[in-house]
Length: 355
Image (cartoon, rainbow, N blue to C red):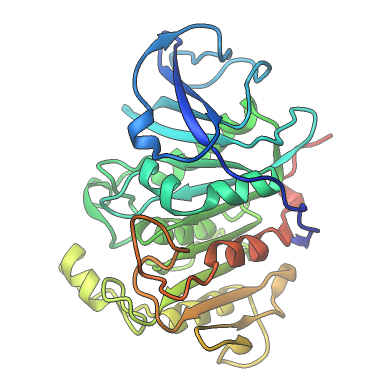
């Protein structure tokens, strides 16, 4: 059973990055101390070797040895890689200013879209602000050839049938063994292909996640036989021409040469309502209505879960708050805060580590 929890109070303003790289033998870790201001990680994560910033090495299997985080100056970005199913898979971790190894911190896995990458998502998704204000660890995995195997979407990861669920769950285990993570408060988010991957994670690894919330795609597979109810929120722009609000046929034709894309935003949330055993009628209830967005869904579901859809009336495919990458959310609805406020209500005590 999922439980609601009280959100953490706000924290501080966000900063800029200075890079240091640590060569640990099997893999290279890039350790970035955040200082004042803000810049794109893609520019600053350069290779210049120094020693002694991070301990805790990988063995030949790609697993970490004893957890070791002392000495990290926060806030920080750490880039790591491991071998998974014969491939090098990498990610970036944002450790917030308020990180305390004595306390347990929520963890968000934030997944980029098709053709995107972890560095760009870090820069435009605004989850850096969520991390700093709420003492949350945020992990930004890198998809294979900038893609995730999330059903009929997308790209090389889908074409090669990669086990991205396995990669991400192993990544969570690694991060949890090296940092002070609250295993009952692990969440997933993402954009587009990363949103479909978030749906897939909630479906196939429901025992891991307390809740999920993402932007601009749907569940692209049938319910897993092992699924147990997980709270989920999806944000979608009515003007999205890449993944249409009504149905995603154009995208499934493009990516999969199929007509599998019968999913639409409302149908998707109705499907999750059915998966979660929600009551209250077939159609979702309207919870909030504003001139530029509305929230609908179900709040009487099995396991104390909820399911919601945020519809942005004037937004397109990237409904994040204003940023230098996209202008798809012209009224600047703070969708990331809406997603975090939703997800952070829920915990998953069944996944908590034994005391």
